[in-house]
Length: 278
Image (cartoon, rainbow, N blue to C red; front, side, top):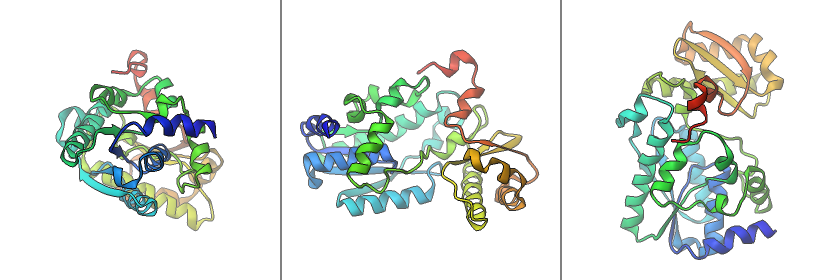
């Protein structure tokens, strides 16, 4: 594949590299590409551990690295200690990425690694609102997918060609992205979102309904469940789904069910904020 060479050739010049590894398809392709271009001994995968990262995602990241034969380290990023993150304004992701990448810079320096790479792709650059990208640019982080012009579809194509287990994995943004801007982020809110999403997936599975994309959105005084469009009618009427969300900690909060929309929380921002990167 021509796109493989466009990705691998520049990576070969990075030197020993730390990959900020979330476990999603983008960072999985970057990690696998780094191993192909540099060899596993020259690569370290770093995964953040925090209340905003589902435990299942950390476990999956650990398995992926083991299968790839690459060193994997988890670090507590403690972004909840940062007021700009905790207050959950429109630039929350900037503070999150800054915390993660500052940790990555320290680890890379301690390990003698010369480059830090993330899974930012060309689709991310084209999107209107990605405050986290600025944090990476400020720290000189490399973005091999974006640099090669690879959008999300191309990344998935490479992942499938390389037989990576994540090739068709749905997007899985951090749990904080489920909380409406202006509603403070707390460990309690994050934990109940994680419990609710796990419980709803279980309820749907028990009803023989397969779901790909699922989000529980904390709107402060209400909660919104987003699922695949084909499941909306079922989820609205199913008492098991409603009980799953209620018992996870949302209690009697008003519940709505809508089709999944990536970045739907950004729709609540005023227009100037919605499209501003910084």
